[in-house]
Each structure stands twice: as C-alpha cells, then as structure tokens.
Length: 99
Figure 1 (tube, helix red, strand yellow):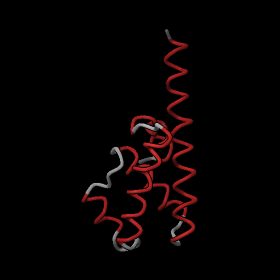
Figure 2: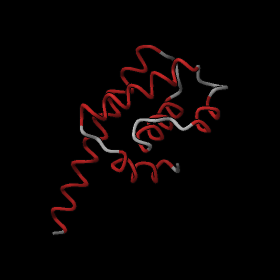
Figure 3: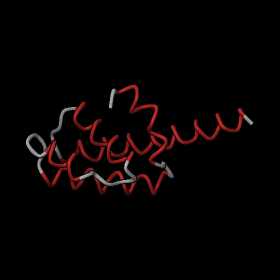
Figure 4: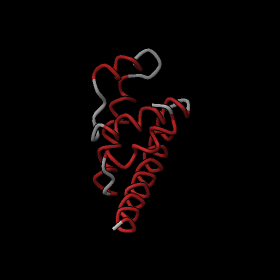
C-alpha cells in the first residue's frame, strides 16, 4: 500500500515537473522575467488548479505585465491538462521554495 502511494506521488511530481519545464520554456520565449518570480507564479497557479488568485495577481502587477500573468496562467492550465499534473503534486515543491 505504501509503495503504491509512493508511485502515485512520484507520478504526480514527474507530471508537475514536465508541466513546469514546458511553461518555463514558453514564458521565456515571450517575456523577460526573473527565474524566481516565474517559479513562484507557476507554483501558485499550479497549486490553484490553473488560476492565479486576484490578490496574487495584484502582488505581482508592479513587476510583471498583465499579459505575462495571463500567459502564465493559461500556459499552466494548458500543460496541466496535457501532462495530467494536478495542483496537489506541487505541494512538496512549494514547501521547499518557502511558498
């Protein structure tokens, strides 16, 4: 039973990392964002099922243009569907990033 739970967690983490890598590549082709800001945004959007909450959007509007925020949000949502990455799979990565 523990082994199956571990496999499920690992599959979720792998799906998240695939989603993360694809979003980073897509965003970097179009926008110039710092790596840490982009990581935070991807993790937040991913954790919330492909949605950037309004208060988080306001938090980043000073340093990230609205078009970039929209692109990140839609990209995460798209790649979550494509890779099967659920919002729960990024929870351990969020803890490691201090978010």
